[in-house]
Amino acid sequence: MDNPSSQPTVIPRSEHIISRDNISPNAVKVLYRLREAGFRGCLVGGGVRDLLLGREPKDFDVATDARPEQVYKLFRNSRLIGRRFRLAHVQFDREIVEVATFRGRGEDSEDDAGPSVERTASGRILSDNVYGGIEEDAWRRDFTVNALYYDIDKFVVLDYVGGMADLKAGLIRLIGDPARRYQEDPVRLLRAVRFAAKLGFKVDPATEAPLHRLGHLLEQIPSARLFDEVLKLFLTGSAIQTFELLRHYRLFGCLFPATERCLNHQQAHYPKTLLSQALANTDSRLAEGKPVNPAFLFAALLWEPLRERMRELRAKGLDETEALQTAADAVIQDQLRRTALPRRYSLPMREIWEMQQRLTTVSGKRPLRLLSHPRFRAAYDFLVLRADADEQAQRLADWWTQFLALDDAGRARATQPATAAAKGKPRRRRKPRSARKGAQDPSLHPET
Ligand code: ATP
Ligand code: MG
Image (tube, rainbow, N blue to C red; front, side, top):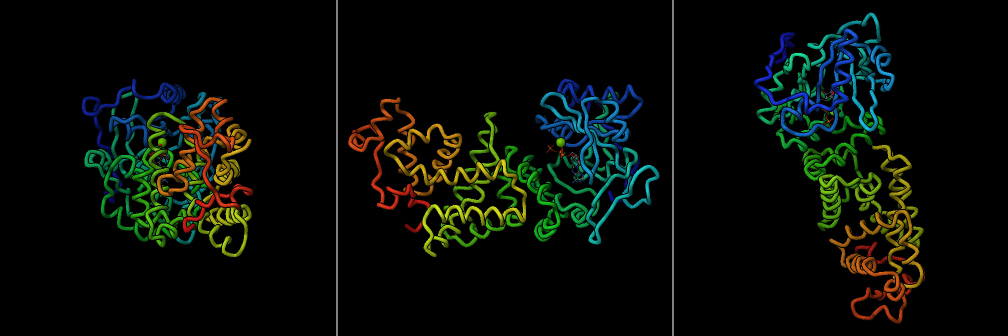
């Protein structure tokens, strides 16, 4: 396989299960429009891979010999994106069909019509906008199973790199020399793990070996790209397996160093339980077609570092609220060195954390008022998550669960000290004096 062949294995219609009916009508439209304009267009990537596996593709990627600008001209509903890897997004309502121009061989000298492949001294590709033919394009893709093309005119699958055999064998295999391909683009380390987890595939030994030792290369990757990748890792339905594999290959710590430290040096099973449970919930929500929120995910991912910081600050004499604010600042700053975390997510994440303190007040007007807080639901869900591994959080979560089940009158009664103890009603928890006046949650401190 090290000798790029220009002749593909052609898998005829009778030997694969892809049919036009399974392809999104929008992707079909794009393919036909390209053809009408005299260009070649094939389906490629995850769409072909997933269809061949009988899975529903997340999205459809198209590869073509039309240049990005030509694609842009052809589709009014398109825009050009990416500097490193320029391509067109064709937008249909809520679906985007990604149209990429066939890439040529990176080693070649200047492409006469465009820039060359730009690399750092270590071989990392800074920009890859050298165009070529389909047979070269195949070899520039990441994994063999991602480099299968579906030709919609002839109904055939084209395989230049042995992807079909790997698909049948359930193998994730990098095309070409693994170490070199990871150096070129270290995000492939994460992609290997993501596809292995999502498809339940094994990573081929030669592709697997560098995973353990090349994680440090991720430090070179812009934090915004890593943030996008984190969302793909944890918000596409296989978060649990992905998390286990990332930890196995020591890649998780490259993305979340503070969390990794907590996981390692806290003997207790607690942090792993909370995070695992959060990831399991995320997977089941997605399986039920429910929305998932990156803010909630990050609140869970960074919860242990937050608690650890808070413990240190409390020991220095800061009160609960100050400790939380200062710790949240520090944890977010730290994390930003690895992955971006846009404010539209970090703000609600903070609110989920802050609400953990506010939820400890279970009498008076406050509980009722909290119900209408935009972050109440997420904060309550987060409390329930904590409850699994924390008895005090468990009692509090039980109180809120019962409270939510009451009607208005019941809720009013439940928050009056005199009636709070009535049977069947949420009970007020006996809290330390400090908590009563300052709405502080002793359960934020595992030792207390
Ligand atoms: P998903 O199901 O997540 O969409 P995908 O395989 O389609 O999986 P995309 O990120 O949509 O992944 O990329 C589409 C295709 O582009 C890939 O299948 C692969 O052929 C190619 N590709 C994407 N990223 C890289 C990369 N970093 N290096 C080489 N090829 C890549
Ligand atoms: Mg895709």
